[in-house]
Length: 314
Image (cartoon, rainbow, N blue to C red; front, side, top):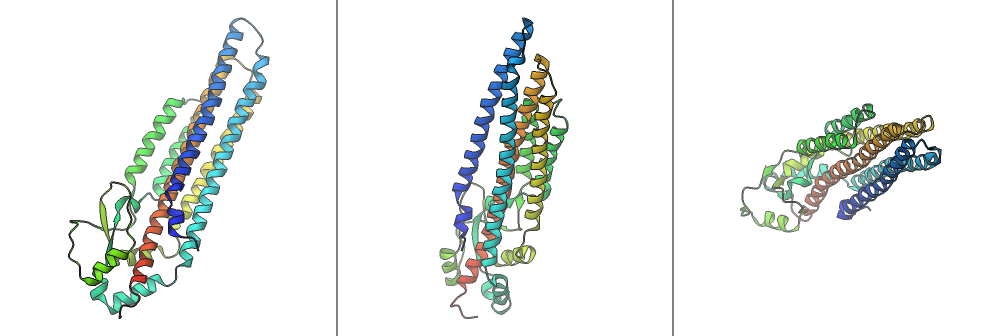
């Protein structure tokens, strides 16, 4: 059985950051190569020398960048597919959580009304499909203007979109704020608090997840997160557009003669594409991974609640 801790392991976040940094380093090296070739072409043009000697090097640099973009997109799609697959497998291994909790709600409302646990709000504060789609629209708009855009403008545009994305994140279910660490609890509640699933993490405020909250979540989401499926489909479409733009760049080079002006255009286009691709992977992986972790937090709490009722007379 795939455990919650396996999918929620912070090593996943570390791996994502390492992938992002590796991509940034790769692109920086190849953009430096294009800068160097741009200078050589400019110098050769100034002295009326042939630039043919640089043709192959420019082609190699663009091809390397293009292949890397395709690799990153494919890697992102595979990563998402694997994580959603693990999540799907996990929730299908859970049996009758909602059914058992409904029985307790009906037969022992005195206990059900008191059961709750705490969780860091950021663990269940997630983006939805609309939020991710808005971010992708900014990538799409930049692609449509790629020949007019420079790297600085593209970066600023995506940074702004990223801030909006983070700000729009909302809790997956309405929960109660923790008013005080001192909460009156009977013996059952005290036992539950000590043994139940407690999340910790960022400095975001802590909230209560009640029995009612869990049932509401289970009723709404069941065994499938439709928004997660929509996110996966949208990320695939956006990735395909990035791959197409990369292939188009290689074709543009094939039909273009080298000059200082064309080198500037090539350099700008490749720079924008590398920014769009690295941010696409970073944001996509982060949003979808966090959503999966948020869902698993709730399913994990449901499972723990069900197990806590074992041995308690109904």
